[in-house]
Image 1 (cartoon, rainbow, N blue to C red):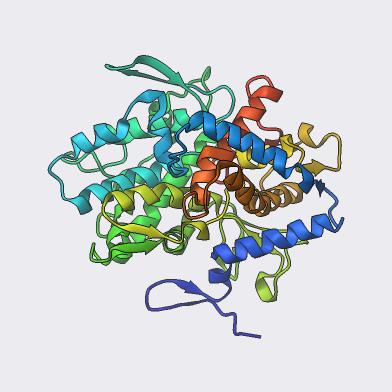
Image 2 (cartoon, rainbow, N blue to C red):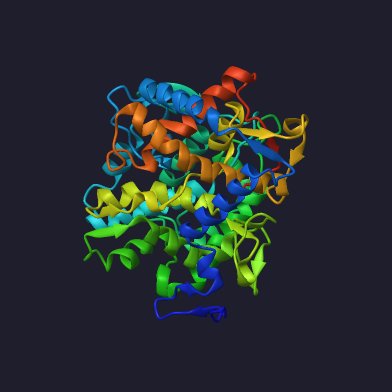
Length: 422
């Protein structure tokens, strides 16, 4: 068997078992192993009815045509939330950045995207964010849209910058000062407007600041996430970039921020969990990686790189996102079937075996669902990568069917969140 010691190569990337668990190929391999095991009746938690996949595809087709009648579907991205309420917030940011170089604009967009995505975990059913604009007046947002709008406005107000002469950036010094009080002000949190996982989000921001500060070779002396632009594009000299390389960079250089407690050989694994049906060999056997937030961040960074003139390739190298809406769609359409009648009534954590299994089934089944959706929409894989299917799409369909089945539209299961996984 190959030597599985953890080493660093000359680019700072991990190799050995850590690299294996940061690979989207491993994500797919382990998730498919769990799906095959469930199909072979080896699961204590679920069965799978793949005959219902076409029903799920029909649901996705209907929502996609409703949301994008011309079938010009953008990527599933945090930037869609910045469009909430019909406000073109990108245009507001572009106006504020007028006169900056293309590279500097890209770095600011990466700064914003990274912080906003990391703050985008389940908000809970009670939380709301109220925004007043000159064009739209007063509008109230909830869930991911609200978190997106609030974090965008916080960025525009300089809440994540320590430079009084440049509000439009994120840097380590500012992040190290983020407290629950800081985020409560940005997100309008009160006793009557509680936000799930506020303490976890604040801790995540501080850990991000520590990580940026500790890696000046990657993030510069100021500790800016936007420095990834220089690292991934050869200081702007490269014209194309494979999407999995973005994910790899995020996992290689930001892994210390994750709070899950999962480790292998003393190294943090982040959103990676043990499951008896995961398969694999050597020290990584039994571990199934997801890296949901990092992949959501990668999807959300595609456009900032493209807007800077970089062509993105191998977008389908990324996987579906195993979270409430994609996984909820598969539960609500009867593709994933709980064995226990009280499954949806229990409260879980991300570490529970049933939740790990449900997430793995979500990843594997989204891959099976994607070609069915493309066929219904008359689109080739090149025309409609997974990033567009998620947006069109599976996420929106999961939300819609949840609203039709349950008052307020909560997902069909209850997972305790600290804001660092979901």
